[in-house]
Length: 233
Image 1 (tube, rainbow, N blue to C red):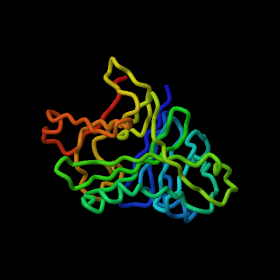
Image 2: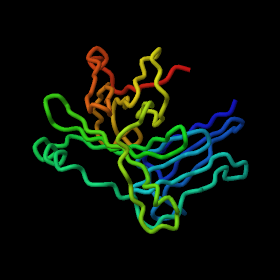
Image 3: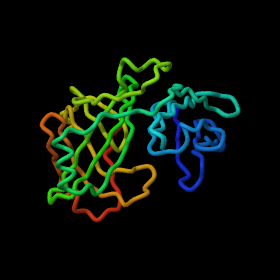
Image 4: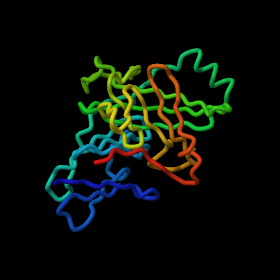
């Protein structure tokens, strides 16, 4: 069985990682010696030996950690000249944001079962119901060529028969035995990597089909600082 562990040193410019068989951790610089557009860490997700890092300039840094040389990793990021541009919010959503102050905003990265990278933007509005807006984006298929000048995003309106565990950054098939509903986002709190601002714990499931949130008051009333959805193994 193979495994990889990756962690961030928040106050330092590098990530640490360790693979099975290693007797020490290795470092991945997030600043020094890194292309300017790929510096920093907003969020990251590890899938197998592939590490996807959403960086501060709105690019995706893709690292292959399967190597066996001294560094142990290879930067296989695409060489785009512009950051990713996402579509404007709808007029209705902009009006709701105008009428209800945005309390928090978070940016997350997720990876589908077919290794497609999704960007997830979460808005929490200052309403009595703690309303949230979720938007999922993917690269525009016509811009996938790394030589294309534009790097635009298109919105993903449906996950089909799959579900997104945002805490884990993974997309899974539905499972009625486990209670995993299709076309839904399982969410607890934003900013899971940097923790630059207090996260509002909100144990909920957002249904992308009907745009509603199901909360679990019994769980939410627990006095805990953090919580995550997880999949039993």
